[in-house]
Image 1 (cartoon, rainbow, N blue to C red):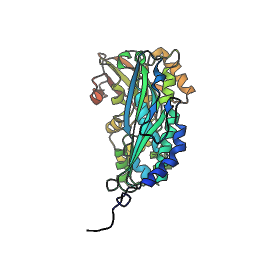
Image 2 (spheres, one colour):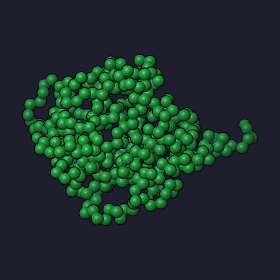
Image 3 (cartoon, rainbow, N blue to C red):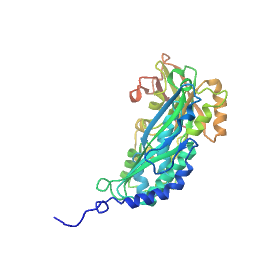
Length: 370
């Protein structure tokens, strides 16, 4: 048995490196603030002045938590860490907007095998930049060094956020009615879902991340690391626009378009979404072709170019499209809501009861434009 003294550092945890990481991230975090935030970086808890809500009649708090998933493996392989934060923030704050709530503040958690201050600071810089874009305050976080559990170059990250909405303004399935239209909002690419499938497809094909792909006009790795579009601020602007009454929103994440749209529809209605209303971005076609992935599996896993969906009255569709154009948010009418008793297309699957929600139904019909 060794008689040499065993320290925390020799066990694999470098406290000083953690402190250096905090110093490096201070400037980034300082940009992701709101006036209601109390205190600064380094406290045991992030504080938010709740008196800012005192003028609300019946404030309802909304919360969400999520991670990035296996997309972090691509960031690690490419040694590019300043974009993954957009994926984390998008997965968290954009779930909150679905109920009509404004995200207020967020915290993050990064677990790693070894604290490399510059790498941690790069990750946090992306988180902070995305929070700033969404109008969300980054009020705190934690970096944990787990030697022996994670490799020296491995890390994972997660986050949680809280938002608020007036009770009368909560978006819920009960607002949706036959005759409403389905407005699709473009994704920036794969976002942060389905990467276990995507990575398996290109691994089996022997494609390295440095491979130039003609359809993308850049390398495979650059395409796969495209940051998730953060919709929160733009969607709040849309639902607060005079003359536009958004009935429901759906964040298209794991499970694909049909399953996530079904979650925000009431029982007794069906949304018919026309694939022919948009052209799938090239990355989805390449994944399907290279991996010989069945179309049904692709649609149950990836967003296929639609990152968000808004449901609203048909007569307001053009006004909503015009507002989206002002926000530089590509959008189009992709379908409509019909009575659930109306005959369904016999050549298309009906998706209902997704993710434990016994709500409405969705049918994807037609074929994508080429």
